Structure formats: structure tokens, C-alpha cells
Amino acid sequence: MSARIIDGKALSATIKAQVAQRVQTLAHHGITPGLAVVLVGEDAASQVYVRNKAAACEKAGLHSKVIRLAADTSEETLLEVVRTLNGDADVHGILVQLPLPSHMNAGKVIETIAPAKDVDGFHISNAGLLMTGRPLVRPCTPYGIMKILESENVVLRGAEAVVVGASNIVGKPMALLLLAAGATVTLCNSKTRDLGAQTRRADVLVVATGHSRMITGDMIKPGAIVIDVGINRQADGKLAGDVDFESACKVASAITPVPGGVGPMTIAMLLVNTLEAAERCLPI
Image (cartoon, rainbow, N blue to C red; front, top):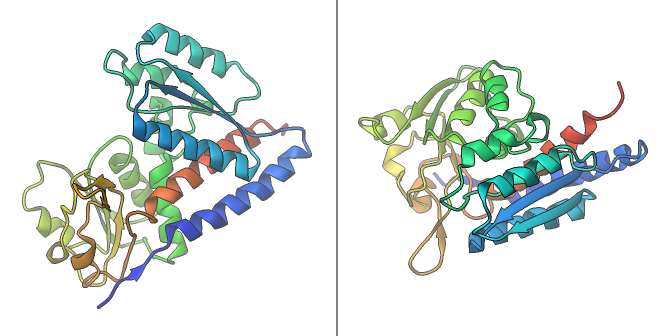
């Protein structure tokens, strides 16, 4: 078996084009969706992410602004920046790029963002709404994965879904979205015994561990859909996912590549979340 490669880049382009059309509709009401990204410090990877997000916004017709703060900025100064953005009517989405410097409490910063403008979907209010099946904002990466599964016509109702990695950013919200779609979900973590026994049951396997090539072909059910969220820089400078792509391709029916799979979808869904935040400002 040779797995079909799921082109996240192409799907993200389609979604971005749809966003651009909806932005034009909003323009008739005098609204331009606005995203504010706050970057603290000089982390190289974060700077790349922020630059890509800003470029994607501009291309789709959204307004974006990047607020750069020095690494030694006080936590209170950052919180004041967030509070100011909360009150800015031209800003519909606020994203504080993680990770933050060690002297800052990321949880406190996220909780300061107005829930309606929390386009990452990390605020405790949005997490609670997701848990109760009434999501206002879905976290971008899990939301993008759901769009990938939808594009692949994957029937989730009654399917066995296994999520490896239980972070608040990907694993937990991913499990909740799959559950809401009718899947039977197993959420694995670093303490899971006999991980392979769990993953081999999965019709849909989502891996987000941050450990390069952790899931190998012998841990995958023949014909499974494999979604690799990981992105790890190897010693030779190349990127690898959390799934061993070569061996997995011999077993899975479809798989997302790294890069070019989940990553582009995360940015696309950030645009969608910002757009939807702006659309909620329309008079009823």
C-alpha cells in the first residue's frame, strides 16, 4: 500500500480564497477584519511564524499589525498592551505569540485577552465552550485538521480516533472536536502503556507529541488516516514530523506530509477565526 499524500497547502489556498470573498462582503458593511499579533523577544521561529501570519492576512484582505516588544518587557506592560487591543474596535482578533519569556505567565496573559478576540481559542472561556459543545472559537490547528478530514470525506461518526499528545493547544481540543463529530476517541499521553496497542486501533490517528518520528509504520492500522502535527528540525537541517513518514506510507491510506500538511492549515484557520470574529460584529 502507498498512502495518498494529503496536500494541506492546496486546501489552505482554497480556504484563504473563500476568506477573501467573505472579507469583500464585510467591506460593504464598512468592516475590515483586523488581527493584532504581539511578539515578545527575538525568538527566530516565532519571528518566522509571525511574518507568515501577517503576510497571509494581507493577501486575504485582512488588516494586520504586529506589535513587537523587547524580551525584557515587564509582564504588566504586556498585559496593558493586550487590554488596549481589547478596546480597539478595529482589532477583531488578538494573538500573543508563544512561547513568552520565562518571567511572564502565559496563562495570565491569555486570560487577559477578550474571549471574543481570542482567535487562538486558548482562553479558558473558549475552552469551556468547546468542552460543552458550543464552541465560539476553535483552536486553529485542531480546526484545520477537522477541515482536512472533511476534505478527505472521512466518516467520523462511529470511527475509532486516537490522538497522541494531550496538550491544551492541540491534543485536548482535537479530542473534543472528534468526539463532537461522533468518533470514539482515545487520548494518549506520555504515560500511556503500550502506545502501539492504542494507535493500531485507530481509523484516524492524530499525532502531536513534539518527538521526531515517534510513530512508526508498525504502530498504524492498515488503511488508517494519519495526521502528523509535529514539525522537528533534524541535525541535517531537514524537517521531520512526529510520524516516521516512510514506514507510515506503506500502511496508511492517507497521510499529511511535513512540511505542507497541517502547518498551512493552521494559518488558514487563524484567518477564518479572525474573519468570524469580525462577522460577529455585524448588526443582527
